[in-house]
Structures are given as structure tokens and as C-alpha cells.
Image (tube, rainbow, N blue to C red; front, side, top):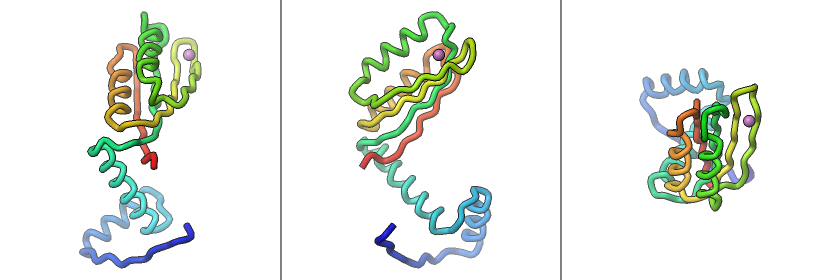
Length: 134
Ligand code: NI
């Protein structure tokens, strides 16, 4: 970070004490780093609500013995091929698979893909993690 901008913030003592406890629990090294993350999160949330371009990953686990599930997962992924950058598949054990799907595209489309996968019977867990793309 070569071009740092410094500014002061006025806060109620109660609020800053609560914030300091919070960031200590999160193991932040400094208030600055915690505030940077809050600002970034807020800007990513703004992108969501405005339907901007986002990049991220869908992490999911599923039961690959579930009838037709693997075919359904593949069909859906082909429907969204234009926003899927890559997929990584891990055979966790005899019956369970882990899949990491890297995505980049319109926020509403990314959410649509994530929801389409999440609701399938046999998908045990799905988490969508998003960063701003630009
Ligand atoms: Ni597998």
C-alpha cells in the first residue's frame, strides 16, 4: 500500500471499546486493518444491491450417491458457463464430494447459480464467498 491516506474518527467511548473487544476476538493486528475490511465489505454489499460485477467462490459438499444429483449439478453449471471460471472437485470419501466453483459475473446471476445448486436434494452444505471484481 504505497499511497496511504490517514484520517481521524470521533467515536463514543462505549462504541470504540466494543469495537476493540470485537477486533481483538477476530485477531486483527490494528484498528486500521479492521476498518479497512469493514469498508471493503460495505462496498461489496453495495455491489450486490446494485447488481455489479463480482468475483468469488461457491464451496459445496454433496452426497454423490444421491440419484441424478451429479447430472443435475453439471446441467446447472453448463447453464451458467459464462460466469464459471473454474471448478475443482475433491472426492472427500466414499460418498461425499467437495466442489469449489470460482465465479465472476453479475451479482444477481452469481446468486442465482448459488441458489440453484443449494436447493438440490443431496447438497449438504453450500457457502458463497464474494469479493469485488474490479
Ligand atoms: Ni467426487
